[in-house]
Length: 455
Image (cartoon, rainbow, N blue to C red):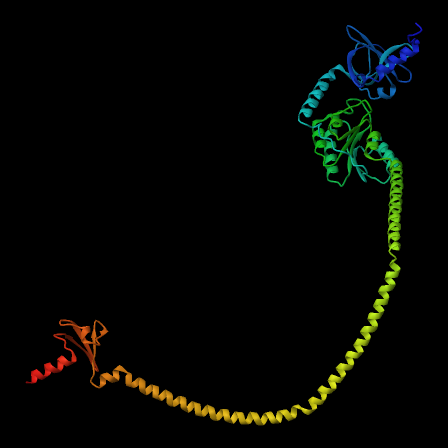
């Protein structure tokens, strides 16, 4: 026995309680059964058993939750109870701490809700999750302006992040007209310049929160162009909009906390960043200072001051030399100018102009005489050429009695160009004579033929 752990009854009960109360699958669950032994305390708390044919479960509904009941609990009534499992340590028994009670007739609505959740999940309405902005300055809130949720949100935002501006889009948050009202408010918020949008309302019964399970509300929330946060009901309440939103907070206050950073933490981070920047800058300056010291050591090693003095002295010598050379050059230029001035006076333009004018007059006279003589020579030469051309003009030759003999438009220059029987043309002064060659003779033969004819 000494090597084994021995627990007291209280320790064992506490261990069991921790197992049950922290089990995630025993929180926010629905249990169906018949009410038995139902009593209400003077404080407004309800105590009853929930039983079926095989078991009995003790249930406690505190007054704060009982205010949302739509009917009076009575023994024999079949109901659906939502809540979490807890342990009553004094008696060592487990029980359910109820948050909502519905009549069993509402089970059909519950089944329809489960089917809607399954369909929306299949269509991808729960998959898109965008990151929330780190430092939002414009926060939109879709909720009732007269509800407690907006006051909780303003209080939390004002404390954690007072630099933010809150813009409220008023809507109904329960009742038959609530879904359409929420849709209109969401559309209004989408047209505003916002960094993040909160959809919220305080706690209530399942009926009170039913508008946030509406399919149209879920689909419109899914189309939000800005990141969305939901804070609907209490910690154990979950609605369809919580599944659609980018972030689901358990309460309106939790939504406000998720939407904004804690300014104290931000200031601490800024202070830490400031210190880091200061240390980094200081370290960088120290490194630069060491580098500069190393450069100065190198410069001192090569004695740059002496080199600068040497360069200055050289510049001074060059400056003196330049000045002396400039004075010498100017003196030479002055002397050259004087010589040119004397030469110019000896060759004054007026003298040269007079002499040149006489030369030009003489040359002009000679040029004029030469032009006239040359013109006369050219005129005689042209006349001789015209005369020669006239002498050679075939028309003038034809006028003297000569003829031009053609054979097929070619000039006949010899007896060899034709033979007996050829047709020829003889162009004379006033026309053309066509003939046929009967015979051809050389010049000697022709003379002999003529003599014989005469004999």
